[in-house]
Length: 598
Image (tube, rainbow, N blue to C red; front, side, top):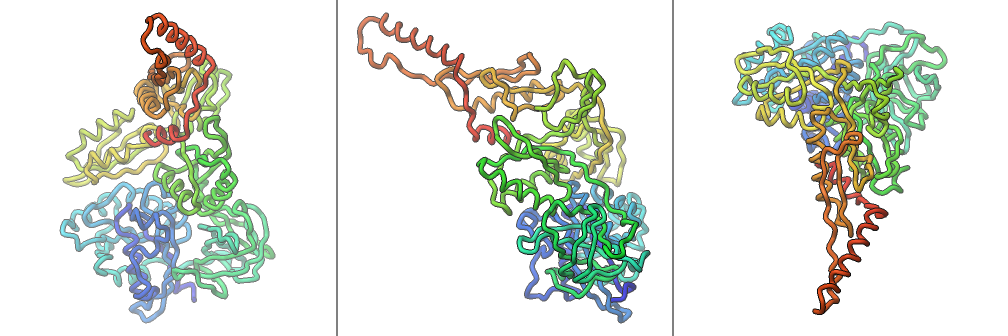
């Protein structure tokens, strides 16, 4: 295919604005998929994606379209996720394209993630085609959405295409617009091979399969290639394209997107964003890759059965290849045994990774309470980065602790602005400004500690706004805070799995909640068990698990009361001795129950 007849584009939108349905219609209209093979959410391959109705992975597919000018064009589409946690998937897709379709829901209008995705696309100098989707809905307000696209995204109204992916309205107009407005790929170093690795996966029989976009030269079976970041050489065994199933091809030329299988055995050899070049005539200029992704949220993942540790380690390597934002390192816990400290981009990302480990690799795992990276400055000016409360140094040696802050852009109906501001203040945030988007919606710009929005902030936002609110956030650096380490002591012994770093003002409430929950799940012993929440040496909350009763006077039938008293005294002494030497074994179920309630 002549490069001037190739178009590379992706679809970007807020979550649930109809990207996947539109990609289904494009595949149908171009005849890429036969009607008998068609199903809803065709590009969403994972069960998780289909169940939740969200896109988690970017999916490439090649289509052929005969335009009105009579020429056949090759359209390479990448369907991208819409949730804020998967923004790195979007940035990788944008690097492999020249244009993007921006989808906006006709009923919901411009959302927080729509704005964020537009900024990502503008940064990559892409041609953006705005599309208003779901115009057939009874509550669609097309004039208002057109005004929002003009005002908020600064795009002219005459460029906007109105469509309904469900009804098949406007699909031809979208395809014609892609052909006419998105530029064809151009080669800058035609004499040497350069291809961008924008994704990869692990195949049990063929090793690592890399997804590439060829910018210069061509790639075919037998080509000797080099990965520029690692400097290792390989021989390409097979190349092909996605239609949407992998189809073997003779070669991949300039502008084409597809896959390549070389003899890459281990997952550690491939870096997403790397440049593939010829090992015989290597290029000296790598393609601009993506920025290194930094995890925002950390959690420990441990196998429930400790014999599965090695299996879990192997599975995490395969998963990391498919999801470059996921990072992990080995760690051990007194309570939970050997496991891994894992980094994620957000809470949904963490949930999806855990669910994939359970489903795709059939592992029984337990995850600890999520935390962020704190920056600790010691008295001797040494700076430590702490992602696990267990590694926090002695309080006497700490000068200050800084926590990560984010700038959050929250779009909500203007009727709930008071409740939303109250929630932001409750989470130790400040509201910087309020912007009126139209007569129904406002955008709040707030600064909040990342730790405070980790767990249930999004759920609370949806509850307050009755599902109409949306949020996007970006990190803005570290700030000093009055942070303390909260320890949970069971029978005087600290349990590291329950330790956490919290703000002093919230420590007491958190300590009471944890102690209360532990009281419910720790089984009764023959002696009283004290559950205490402590900051350093100060106890701030306490619950007691009562001793299990044993009737030592059951054998006494009548007789003098002194006989019974003697037995009771003897029992009391025994319990005192037992409390001094006895240990409390906290069952695995108790850890799981407590971590779930958090």
